[in-house]
Image (tube, rainbow, N blue to C red; front, side, top):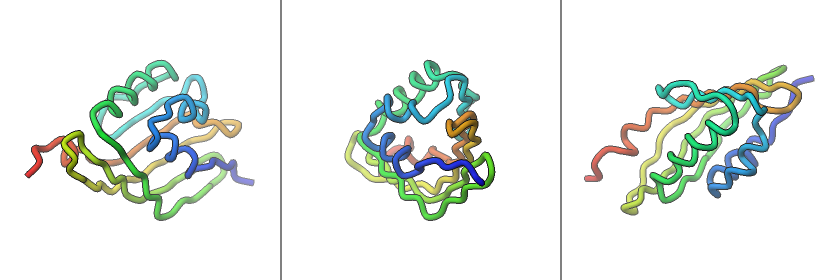
Length: 122
């Protein structure tokens, strides 16, 4: 039977900027790959990286269109709706692959291209 992960709760924690709850889904030695950025390993490094990213935006809302739970992985896709600090909105398609080990995320891969988020607002 596939391992389960409460995807909605995971992304809701990110949208609330609740790093404690977000990190509770991750294994202590989790590896995070976000877009084309270098791999970050371990909860402390992930906390620092995600915190720095969240400080750059006013808010986010993850909208998951579909998810699949397959053995020890969860795959999902949808859009992330960001509000920049200047109040403008940007929506970006995203896909995620998360490897699980005993119900915890051991590898978190986020495939999205964020250049539009940080481009000059027009």
